[in-house]
Length: 391
Ligand SMILES: NC(=O)c1ccc[n+]([C@@H]2O[C@H](COP(=O)([O-])OP(=O)(O)OC[C@H]3O[C@@H](n4cnc5c(N)ncnc54)[C@H](O)[C@@H]3O)[C@@H](O)[C@H]2O)c1
Image (cartoon, rainbow, N blue to C red; front, side, top):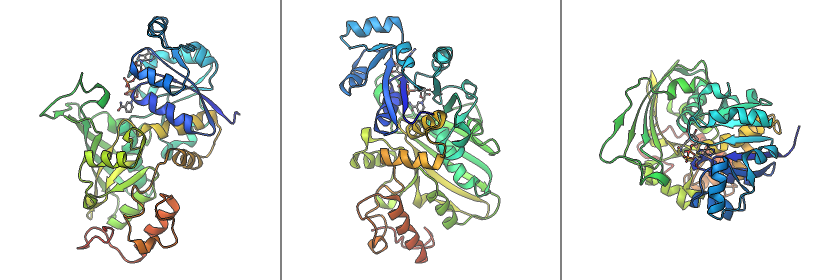
């Protein structure tokens, strides 16, 4: 068992570049290099960051060299120095690399564009980390499936979920390619019902009853989900809020703080100096939570470019076995990346409940203590006329 995981990234696009930066932050991982087929500004940034750049194909090596990109070697050279490769190539390209990875004898992680069968194990850290420990390969599920799994699991682990129904409105395109793809003044419904995300969530939570319906809209700042979860018994707003609070990588935002839309959430991430404005957590609108005797209702935002990055880091630890305990890995990843339970911990709770806590430092323990202290005052949720969490 190795104590430092040597990690290679194949595909340095939206996901690959973020995974590379996250690997570089971990004290138990070494980024041995990245590989791609393009030679434009995107891979040049990897050179600026000091990441050894490799050519995934012979043709791309010639093009990179012609573009004066220093090429450290081929993909095979890179694989020979790695314990695990994270494939971040486009959908359906990744599966074609499977024989190459097997031949090199490296463990492999694919992303959600590939099917479950590519690895036979679909991964969301807080749901099924332990089952991936020591495996040769796994697939980190898509952004939407990751969010649905985190949220569903937060309730399902209490035995509360009878059936999840969710409506997903996906972003039309990613920012870097908005000049090529995208739409304006429309929303495109998916005609396949259920959309693939519901069945995909069952590759992570096999006994979850879930149906999803999806569409795509004319924006590029993440996805929004509206979920109606039929419960096995009446679940109160307090119980719902606590269950979400207890789930890693789920954080609250509130319209009463001015966080009223997808763009506000991303602006908040930028203001918090998140790299690239990334949000790794699922942002749940706390003031849009609702519950009745049959169902609970949630609205949440999924930053598609970022949410799978911490999952991928945990997956590296699981496959290589450098950390057998999922909770420990999640904690380590979150600390290294700055993943929070509260985005604005110094002001979102009344100051008196932060007494003795590290005001200004988003330490999870401090924020949780504040939350518990607050809840002990008898706050009953957003049905109260004045929300005392507002300052
Ligand atoms: N973009 C998202 O919102 C998002 C979210 C979650 C998961 N994913 C999944 O992550 C994976 C990667 O998606 P992405 O959005 O980062 O794609 P992307 O197009 O941004 O990046 C893919 C990269 O792979 C490179 N590439 C293409 N062919 C290659 C090859 N044969 N060998 C090596 N590199 C090659 C491309 O040049 C590009 O840099 C897909 O499975 C996707 O479904 C994407």
